[in-house]
Amino acid sequence: MLETRHLTANYGQFRALFGVDITVAAGECLAIIGANGAGKTTLMRSITGVIGNEPRMVLHRGEPIGGLSSAEIVKRGIAMVPEGRRLFPSLTVEENLLVGGQARKVPGPWSLNAVYDLFPILRERRKNPATTLSGGQQQMVAIGRALMSNPELLLCDEISLGLAPVVIRDIYAALPRIREGGAAIVVVEQDIGKALAVADRVYCMMEGRVTLVAKAAEVTRDEIHSAYFGVAA
Image (tube, rainbow, N blue to C red; front, top):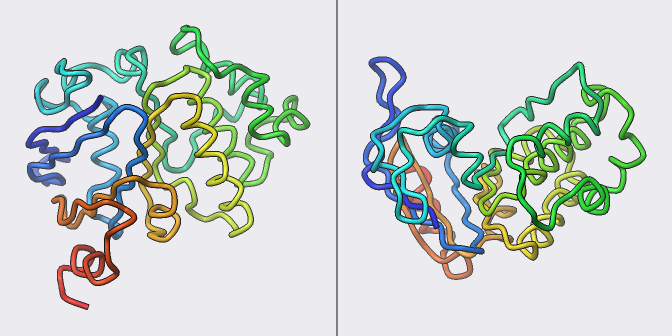
């Protein structure tokens, strides 16, 4: 479904990605792990058009999309839950969700009611300003907003960051249900255990490069340690 080929990315004169190659199959859950500064968020921004690339560095269903805008990429069925959630503070929970549905109007499993069934607390808080919710509830809104476009690929950037363990559990419990709706998922995560528990395959990044590609169920602690830190355990 999605592929990057020798993907590079720069912030001014600083190069953040060095020839990154990843693939995501239809319906797959992929984990991308790595320390702060490894390039994980830059990779997500490159895929979603926030950072411009050479067209053939990012392919969607075989077609080059590296030069497309973020709006065009959303219309192709690729949605992101950004790090930090980035909700609209002047809008209610429900209004934030409806904005996601305006980005791509296609039939699919996700609607307001479906999102409320996934995260029942949002139905109770639907008239509240979104930014008055707890951090975990705001993360649910951010996920729901992305789902409202009925994406075939959902990119989740650090969805557990700063949340309490019980909230993280609830967030991750929703991912299998999202896959049941037909979407592939990419989870960018520093919590290795959480990421591996839901993923089919894992990529590890360090300093803008991929250092490990493995099946999540088979990768060893020593392999992850070496790929994560660049040294043997």
